[in-house]
Length: 205
Length: 205
DNA sequence: TTTTTAAATGAATGAATATTCATTTATTAT
DNA sequence: ATAATAAATGAATATTCATTCATTTAAAAA
Image (tube, rainbow over the protein chains, first blue to last red):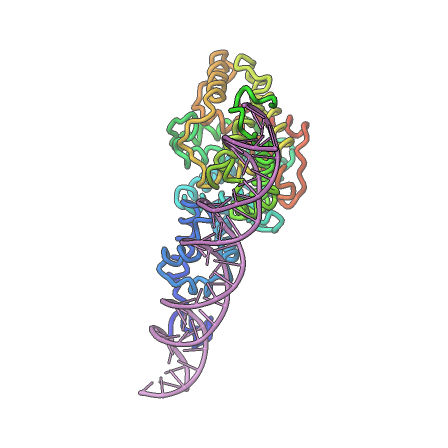
């Protein structure tokens, strides 16, 4: 008997959650370090200390594994982004919380984020999937409210999004590549984030 | 005898430039459609109507092929971006030319651009390479001049870059994904680009 | 303890992979 | 025409790939 007995059939031998977690983590690590083709099922099994066949207990196949990793990261990311957020917040305060939350995620889970970006920029991603309905509803409402209150003028959500978050993601890229721009070091401190944020806010005034 | 006889040894049979071009184009197409692992050397050969061995006449190996594709696109992209640009231009005019030039490239070579983005977001890219020195020098000078003239205040080049181009690349992503944001159509017309550009300029004022 | 169930496995499978190599083909100089 | 040269090739190579399967292991119910 264990804490999950009430959910699963009593005769079941429970799956080792550590095994699945190891597979997930190692898969993302390998993809971030070596690319998608660097993560073969056999090498993944070795890295996660399981048999190749074990992976197929937890995931239908390679594609299923990749998709579930992507969806998991996306879910966590949007959850974190909504931490303490409310579409009724003032435009400046709401957007600032979003920036801070997103930075938190990137700093806490750099490998997850790198995997996410790589997947998103590959043809493996399915853009036509309708996802994160709650998150999108929040964002839509936030934009509507800001317009209603006259904090920003009415505009296409894509234009709003690109001005509000484009600079943020651009900075994050510099931060993660570290030695990229003009072959110069760049550390994304909170004060630099604030500086960029102030400029973005000016754009909306 | 042919028009190149003065460059190459007279006994050489000249390489078929169409073959190399076909290999390059098909490689990018396959990668954009199916990802890196979708471009096997054998399938590429088939798509380009050559023998697998022929690819190795033009490229040392698979890695060399990918790197040369990336460098070629990057070179063309920065060349196009500098079309009619001068670091002595006013800030607003110079930045607008950059936006227009970049959009031109994306519209003219969508497959090249998609390949470029996918490669840039993969671990195959070598961030430590010092590249495009002329382009970078132009950008640096442009920023310096704008500060000198008092058109914008002094700031880190990364912050400048993220505000100046982050929104642009974000819009381009929406444009190329077409049905992405809020599962809504988005067409990046010149007038929408101008609208976003005006907001960006406000950020710098 | 015995039985039942699914988790976990290592070895095996056939298909696909990047690259090579012995030949052939096409071009130009002689 | 012939010789010389490199382009171009198709078939072959050894390796690696994702996936499967017959079997073993572990856990919990009876």
